[in-house]
Length: 351
Image (cartoon, rainbow, N blue to C red; front, side):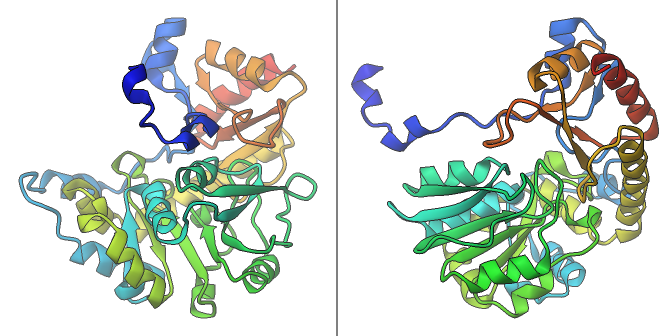
């Protein structure tokens, strides 16, 4: 191995592996709890799943064929109100950002990342040979609007993962107008929020707004993300993107069906919002604009998460989020029954 490991890129030494939420199998093996008794509230998934039309569409795919994306792109155009020429896609939001960083970042380039936030922005920057410039959110929540000079890209997650707050339009405008770099506004959770800033793409040539079907549309397992970008960026994106945006027949068919059934999506979002309000009241949590809550704990967060898992409830330890410290956890809003189980366990662990 030593003979060949010299070929690895030096930047890898700067990275820690991305830490995903725990899964059913791990908890079952560790605690002996049957999977049907486990409540998974650690990965911000939609507990109501996708539209029935998605299941029907998946049954009709021809897996021996390459995907045809026309219907999907037309559906996304209708949903966003933008022409399909300005819409690009990828294997989840991660895939979209991967292509964007490949067309904009080079060795030595700097990116602006307010923390705590989604850690994949840092991974993409480092793997591009770039240097992330971190800035703590004001009061732990508000994005600083002073973007350092000579930044190539800025990543703003709104609503922010893991804190759940949404950056005001005025602040986003100040950030976009203050830099010659590209601003990526990550709106993965926007369907659960009060507003979207997608319309700003019409006003700024350096703003890209990313979206996903993983959350509100219930397609997390199919990895389908997309973005709306100015025409000049969308053109360059298509040069660097994999064939068919790297999508599969399954993700294309599911996405096309999901964006046609907006009634189902809005209904599931409404259920989540009702439960989000209930959880916020009952545990006196800070208000969130996502499908999750960010909770401060008196006990160390890893101890709280371990205690919850021993009771069959998976929540997220926020220590891997740079800047979150050791006393925050994140809990996904589930069904009423799942949330009841969370409240019971959380009350016992954090009493």
